Every structure is written in C-alpha cells, then in structure tokens.
Length: 291
Ligand SMILES: Cc1ncc(COP(=O)(O)O)c(C=O)c1O
Image (cartoon, rainbow, N blue to C red):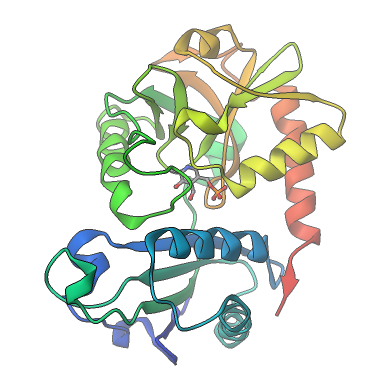
C-alpha cells in the first residue's frame, strides 16, 4: 500500500520525507503525536485527536503556526490524495530544530508531518482468540513527572521496554502498573475488566493515557445498558474478572484472555467483550469525517 506524507506544507512519497537530524523530537523526544484510523473513507474521531494534540502543544509551549482548522483541512486533503479507504494516519509535531535541550536556543518552527498508511497492530486471529498479556516490570512514567494526557514521543521509551518484555515472553502485550502497583495500561492500549457484567477500567488518575477509544467504549457500553466504573484496580482484580479486553486506536477492541499464563475467566473471549466489539465495529463503520 503506498504511503503518502505531508511534511511542512508539501506532499511527497515516504522515501522523500526527511527532516533534519537536529529535529528536537529526534534529539530529545520533544514532540507529540496522534495515531488516527480511517474507516470507510472517513477519519474516525478526528476532532478528538486534534483537540488532544493541540492541548499537548499548548502544554509544551510549541510555537505552532498552523491552526487546528487548517491542520484538519490539510489532513483530510492528504487522506483524499492517498486514496486509502481503511488505514492509519500518523500525525507528528516536533518543537523545532537545533542542538541543545533549551528551547530558547533552537529554531522553534515546528516540524509537522502527516503520514497516511495502513497498520495491523495484532494478527487477525488475536481478535477471534484473544491476546496473551504479561505483567511488565516497567512502571508507567509517574504523572508528577509527565502528565499522562501528554502524548509525548519521549515517554514511549518505557512502553517500548515493556513491549520488548512481552516479546521475550511470547505474549502479545505487556501490562504496566503505576508506582503504587495499581493497574495502569498496556504499551499502546487501555485495559478493561468485566465482573458480573460490570465493566471496570483504571481511573484517569492512575497514570493512563485517557484513550479516545477508551472514552468511546465507555459511552457505547453505557448506551447498551452496562454499568461502567472508572476505578482503582490491582492485579488481583484481573484474576477475579470474568473477562478482559484492551482498547486503542491501533488495537481497536481486542479480547485479553490471560495474564502471566493464567487464564482470565475461562480463558476465552467473553460474551460482553464480543458484544462491545460488535458495537464498536458498527460505530467505526458508520461514523467519522468523510474526505
Ligand atoms: C500508552 C497508550 N495508552 C492508551 C492508548 C489508547 O489511546 P487511544 O484510544 O486514544 O488511541 C494509546 C494509544 O495511542 C497509548 O499509546
């Protein structure tokens, strides 16, 4: 599938899209990103992603010259040019270019990149059979160091280490706890547990990225009549649960069937998970911003 990139005002093939090696995201992780899905030639939750990005831009004090409306129109235009009806958009913004940590000393013209491509995070059979997960020894970055709502490139070092642990153990994902030992999230997804048809997920203050898919699934579940609680959960709660699943833009909704080689419930995707997956697929197939 061809990959098309818009970089600082110009559309080009992936191979030609280059920035300076002194880009501040390259040198220090001083950048933000969003991963956004395209379903049926519509960009799903586009405005939610753009709002999260611009909140991060304001928090980090980037001197962004392109406004949210212009970036939105540009992104839709690039999608049209890429002609990918079901795909994945990577939107990156870095602070600027220059050596040295201090933003004062660099060219603070942000590098803005939109890449339209495709992405399958997990193999198709994992959506049918469920995912094996291991508990990572890597904790999420403390929220008093870096606010978890900041989808900052630099924070993903911890998540990549955790993902490598999962790879070494032959698992699909790694579950990260916070410094208090409470459940936080997986490397690129939020976690949900289900007990007696009550759906529970770690509270926003547990050091999680408050995922857009997480918020959507909470809405879908409540509309369907399920009780949903955002709360504080421990590893014990995972094994006391009947079912579990993960959510994320790249992951979508995927059943989690075991943790550290111990089954959750009967070790198969559960009925509530399957119901929510079907409702989620219906929503992604029928909503979004057309291009
Ligand atoms: C660490 C982390 N948690 C959760 C999520 C899920 O967030 P969203 O549903 O907004 O994609 C992501 C996805 O980007 C992530 O990187």
